[in-house]
Image (cartoon, rainbow, N blue to C red; front, side, top):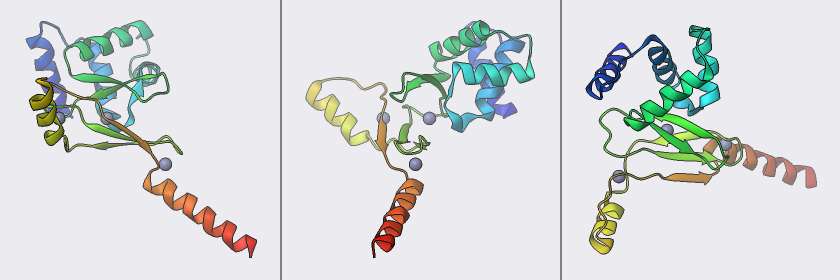
Length: 159
Ligand SMILES: [Zn+2]
Ligand SMILES: [Zn+2]
Ligand SMILES: [Zn+2]
């Protein structure tokens, strides 16, 4: 975590920004909760635990700055809430998401999987792909198991 914080600090410096204590508190929350796809309010509440004097506007500005310099990606899973997602180190393109319509869980796919599609887009449309957003909506493994068990239970009850 210190190593990644350091990289982010260098990235900020390279772009002419400082890692102020407020920005550091925000970045730490993002690193600690990397799996969680937090909204600005979520981040704010967690940052406030560490730095009670910090305001929502400051956290929001930090998140926007981190988005601008591509340390963070902003993503919306269709529920109207903007969420902030740390870019994976060394990843050329944004990772994909599997959003469960039953329980709302979000899983990440780190492999790009789109190289073939990207080259078709480039050759057929002459469009140079720089990035992409891919969200699959469906039913996660756990929910499939749960739904399936319910089916079994119903079948048994009907007998
Ligand atoms: Zn993600
Ligand atoms: Zn890609
Ligand atoms: Zn689920």
